[in-house]
Image 1 (cartoon, helix red, strand yellow):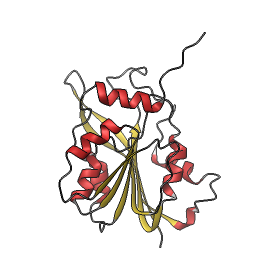
Image 2: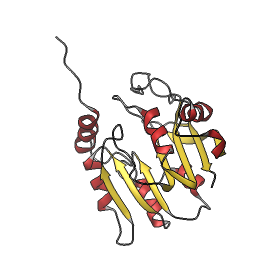
Image 3: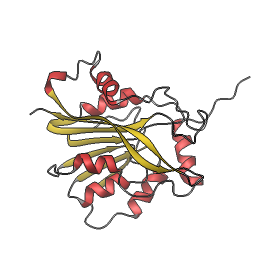
Image 4: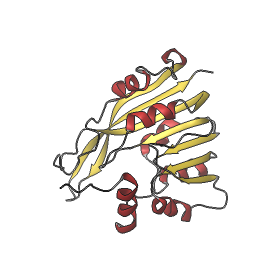
Length: 215
């Protein structure tokens, strides 16, 4: 007799509820860099967690829809929201959630999971929600940090793809996306400094893909 593990909703809600604050609350550096210079409009933040990216976008003039599976995580972001921040917080499982409209910016930063997550399907669906002239930004881990064992950094999906692989997966056998209608702006592996749990300094690579949907 086998015992089923927690669902994705149970896993993430328990993690945020029992583990205290998980993240710094700061924007992901790659997103800030890729969005710099864009005219603010509507933004969809996928897997927003405790809202660091959503809050930063709102304070730079974006009207943000922030979606995450954990109500507790979203409550942390909402508590930090200022009166002028235009953010709609949506508790939903991205495996099933459908964007209700199109957006000038769709971003997904570190949408990884230790439980089952159809990441590729979620990102393919998200790309269809980018408005003509709009921007898609996907940032993910690339490789395992030097201090972590594979078990400590395992993900339900095996691969941590590079930007070329991410781009290919978006368009492969996907009639809803036509590659000729997109311009690749950034496709890179970018190293950033990181401090390990033991205090030692090192670097970690991020996979960064930014594309613009041609008007």
